[in-house]
Length: 311
Ligand SMILES: *[C@@H]1O[C@H](CO)[C@@H](O)[C@H](O)[C@H]1NC(C)=O
Ligand SMILES: *[C@@H]1O[C@H](CO)[C@@H](O)[C@H](O)[C@H]1NC(C)=O
Ligand SMILES: *[C@@H]1O[C@H](CO)[C@@H](O)[C@H](O)[C@H]1NC(C)=O
Ligand SMILES: *[C@@H]1O[C@H](CO)[C@@H](O)[C@H](O)[C@H]1NC(C)=O
Image 1 (cartoon, rainbow, N blue to C red):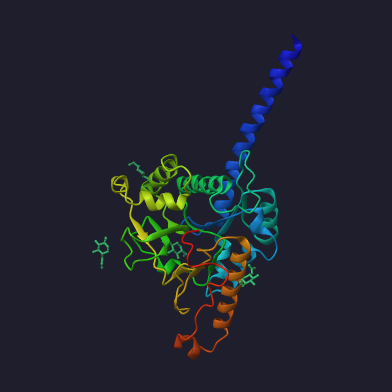
Image 2 (image 1 turned 90 degrees about the vertical axis):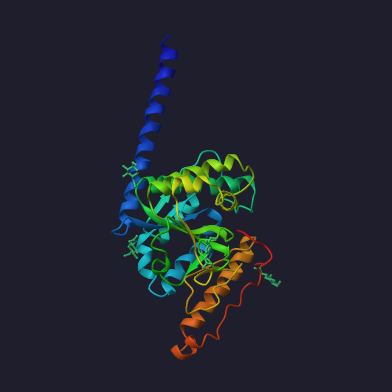
């Protein structure tokens, strides 16, 4: 008789421990968000897995871009890096102040995720659900993929009246036109009822579009009348300021961010990101008269490909 009782006791203790550790995770998230937050409860978020966390890899270029941008280095104190695995978390703690480990179940997010594999999709959806949680905690955020170089402070370029403001692979020249092709890798989201409801809707829409990633699903559901019902205002950000390899920000005097989108494979991405950083440094070291002449332009794409829309 004593054996089954002990057995149950063991499971009871394990259950209590798991509840406590979930609670402490939740507390820790709150602490990290609070510490990194601007006065107006706004933070900057990116996600990181092992493949992007090695020295000299994507995360180093990302942080480096803030240090070499125009008035962007002070934004680093508002950046929280969300690590998907142990290696990414450890590396984050070596290079940055605010790190959070997003505890995941049985999926290993540490390898390079090729576009549209099951693991990649799971990682993207997990991220979206996490962002909903951040909104629910009352924090507005800029979410930025780590393969986006920050060259200028983006805040002055946002619209005062957009709940969700999202960068584009292709921008048609009008911030409210739904024909803009959104890229979910960079967005500014205000925490309010509309955005929280929208993130729930977006996440639940994955069931209606199996096999697609969050960004494709965003481009499907942007037409959905439910968005009007929610009262969510979407603004698409111009590639003049928020560019990428798909559609570069032509003028370096105006660029805020450059994304290694339209690019498949980590080696190609790293190659072109390094070129983008070199170009930026060359631009920054030019005398003002040359800068404003507007004659300087990007040398990308090289190994990334313009023909690959998305990512
Ligand atoms: C929050 O604060 C930042 C930094 O001062 C500012 O740039 C941004 O515009 C503010 N956001 C809002 C919604 O007021
Ligand atoms: C921008 O697009 C919206 C929606 O398609 C349209 O109502 C509006 O007239 C457009 N604005 C301009 C300046 O073209
Ligand atoms: C959301 O809506 C409820 C009820 O309509 C309101 O009390 C609350 O203040 C709203 N919250 C936010 C963040 O706007
Ligand atoms: C980039 O492309 C060049 C020319 O096609 C090739 O020689 C080089 O190995 C590529 N580099 C990477 C890192 O993919």
